Length: 176
Image (tube, rainbow, N blue to C red; front, side, top):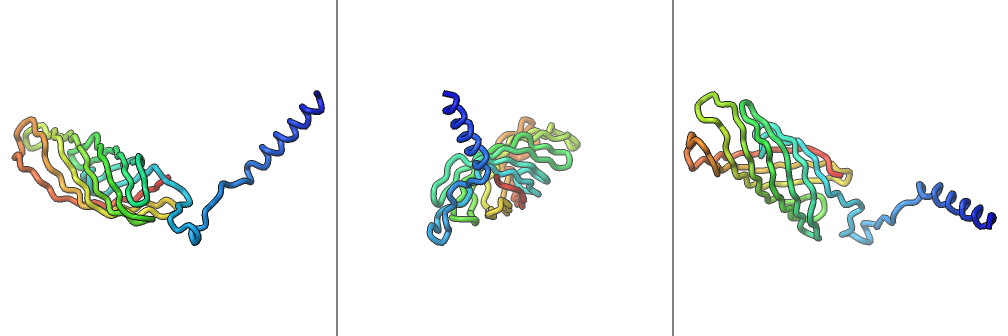
């Protein structure tokens, strides 16, 4: 009995010591061109202009993926002078293979603004997204997008109902 316990302990020790040296199978991209070496499902990035007005910090989680399409959920917060966009929430569809993707998305934004010109500055905005996204093999994320704003709700009727603001932004971040 004691001998069996010693053999088991030595076996477990060898397994634990060598497990740090072992790696999962890596597919050769020349043999398997559609294989990805690492699936990155989380994105965090800062955005200049774009959906969060002047500056924003965003997190995305990939919910679905197939060969040509990815579906992501996005949350974030943005700010500008006298305006805070909290929260920013939306969905994105990414079309394309490998590192380059066309991005199509939609965000809902609730703004809270300091009133300096009348009205309380609290609005609900719709924010479609059309853009380009590059994700490097090492995880670098670059985005460039057209992000217009449409007013959905103005409690004071301070701004006209047809508010449309064309806007664009660029983003830099990391995927993991």
